[in-house]
Amino acid sequence: MHHLHHIDEEDKEIIKKFLDVKHYDPDAFDPEILNDLEADKEYQSLLTFYGSDILGSENYIKLKSFIQHGNVTVFEHSIHVALCAIKLNRKMGIGGREREIIRGALLHDYFLYDWHDGEAPGNIHPKLHGFYHPGIALKNATRDFTLSEREKEIIKKHMWPLTVKPPRCREAWVVCMADKYASTLETLKIRKGKIRVNYA
Image 1 (cartoon, one colour):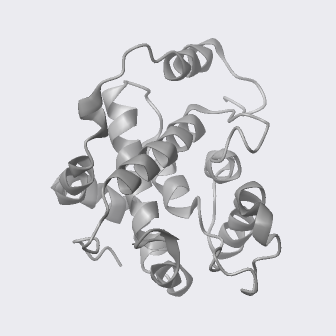
Image 2 (cartoon, rainbow, N blue to C red; image 1 turned 180 degrees about the vertical axis):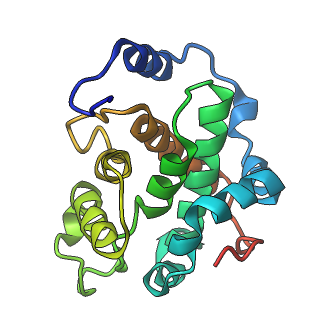
């Protein structure tokens, strides 16, 4: 059995592939990609198949009331990260486990407070949100859902390099990169509409 404490040679090659991006393709940063991903029926069905218990839970739906940045909610952002993670995993031939990628991505920002509000309940480190929210999200997710070790690793390490210790499985690397990629697309696209599919 493959343990997270020991990165095997195949995983090392995958990590090198992620970190050795030599070519910048401006088309890869077209914010319309988000619309295309949202409209992809296969990707929609994967989110529902692997994440229906998460997406339909009372606490998870609360993410619709918290803003991530601009007018993108934490709920929307988490969907975007899951969709981007599926795309990256397939496009780059990473071979990560889609179930764990999707569930970890959906829960990576499951901190359940308004991080813009320093007085919000649960926002215990308002000026250091970037450093502390992965641990808070992991605690909440572990309380509300049954998680695999890889799903826990995804949530815990998605803010690398702020988390200092890098991800130790390919699924966590995929979501770490997908989070940054989705955030870039969201920032580039000043999104005026809400997510078009109601996954809950």
